[in-house]
Image (cartoon, rainbow, N blue to C red; front, side, top):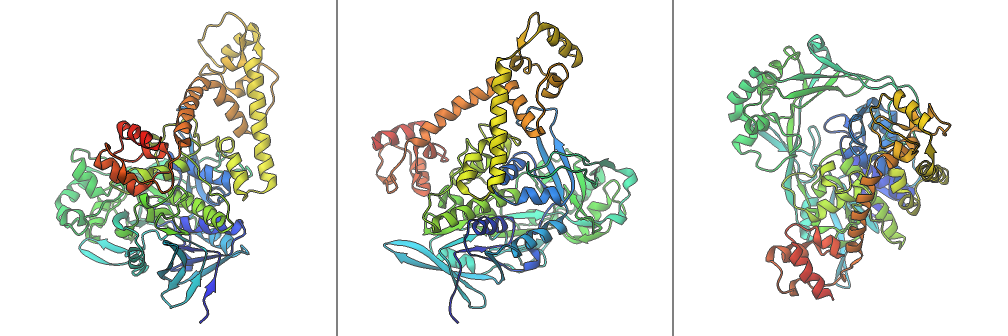
Length: 620
């Protein structure tokens, strides 16, 4: 059989693989998306939620750059909700509950209908790698059916499927997800070609039948009929949200777990790999926090067309009979019926220090990695990595410079920079605390931060780019106007009375300074003076920039210092082994990561300020 050809091959049909395929296809490359089972493309293996602190920022940024996730969650949600509205602008986000069935159905339809994308249901067993001038170069793949496919770039977005092992109690078997096979041979091909692999694990809770829940005992959490969307391109409409519900574990639940801990795969040693720290299993919670009794449990519907409820907060791989006892001890779930049992999955991943910030391998040219194979956790983290890998795979094929988003430009940059340079003992999750520039990297201002990057990438239409540019121009113009315009004392007093502020002002004041008063908003200004009305996302920017300009200016100065460090480049073939005077830990990190700048070197685990000074001296 003659080899088949694609410009870009994407291995894996999860959130990373879907965004990678769409990004490369939209940039004109012929893409082959390989997955074990076509019906499970864009499957949400764990909860139905999209977004959260840091995660929502990733989705909004990807949307501005040309990704798909924001658009789909806006259109195929069960509820959308604005969180942290009483907090500062850096904390305000939108979080959504997706309709898991409709989301993946629509994503598959988008992929199928793209003229440059072909979907292929085969397992990839082997990479085709050749030596060129002493450098390894990807040439294609071989599937389990023995079919050879050639490509200039290959993107691995394999999720939990590399040598995947399912664990429930003392039972374990091969599988990448419950009910699906694992990819058993690709790991061997990676190791053979010089890629280092390690193991992580993740877990998921049971799903129960909605009809078996006593909702009269539960607190209802409603969504919003007129929410703030993830995408600023989404046309506004009134939503029909589906509620979630909250309950709690009881003393009886904790007693059940204590009595049954001997059956826990964590205690028995069947599982000895690290899992996500921010969503631990209930047995791990009991081990780590023995005095806490009332752990929150959120009950989330998975689809409008299903009775399955996701029991968020009850992640476990305990045996089935233990899962039943735990559930029946929880308020409102006394008669609950399990439809799917919770389980854990262990899998291979490739530590990301082996990658450039483009997500291209340092070992094999033309090979890119995205998602859980890089040691991350979460749909949003996987999706944005897939998008960046897809863009850079396409650009590499065309001989264009790669797209790199640094940590001062977006949470996407924070994520990629962190996984390459900082060692984490568990699957990595984006959090606001990981960013030094949280006020700059807000959920609602991605269109201002990433417009130029989006224009350079070239996925967004001219119409959408013009829409973003006009928004930026309006914000800048109105900020300048309000900074320089003085409001009379009479109008100031009228406004302060209106917003019930106790602030005492004795003369006219610039409107920009007036907006620094907590109670004063852009909306309230409209009631006492003639200013323009704009779309909400534009008005939010005007208000935030003026209200927090001192803090934003402080961050901008920090970013300037950061940029200077990034501009101090390190030659590509610099010999880090030859540097005298730096610690062995620093030398090991520098050799592994091979940083391209002093700024990048300074963020490697174990590298100190003294090591950086010695490195700069050697470069000079």
